[in-house]
Image (cartoon, rainbow, N blue to C red; front, side):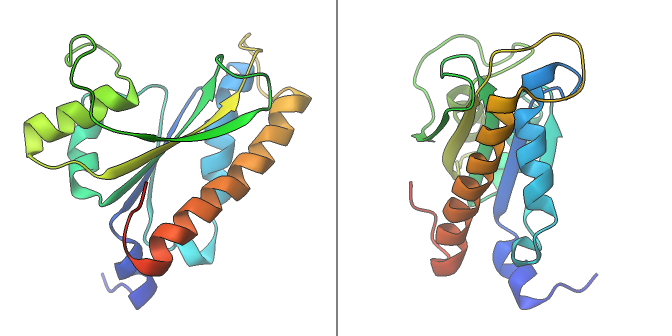
Length: 165
């Protein structure tokens, strides 16, 4: 398969959206990643949707230069969007559980593959996790803001070819 120049330049970027769209606001990250997937200037960026970060994501992370993780968060007010840099944790529980924090994923990636990408987490505050499809109004608004924030971070990475966090 042939890639154009933009796709080749974007090939080192991985986006992982974490969440379950069948659990209300937990689908926020899925909505963000789906909005980003169709953008022409992001051709070649790899997008992965998962219900949680798992050890299996370490292989894909090891091949990335830049990693953007998008997730819903109960640590923020519904609809509030936050962006933070993450680094491999030096402690913090087992690396072989059923799910990992972003810091644990990076630690596992480094331990297993000897390298770790520059990484950022974009989180959308969420509150409603009952069974059902659809986001609460506050979270839907936050998704729009998160798409803009993620797009800006990706553009910064892709414009100069260097992942700064």
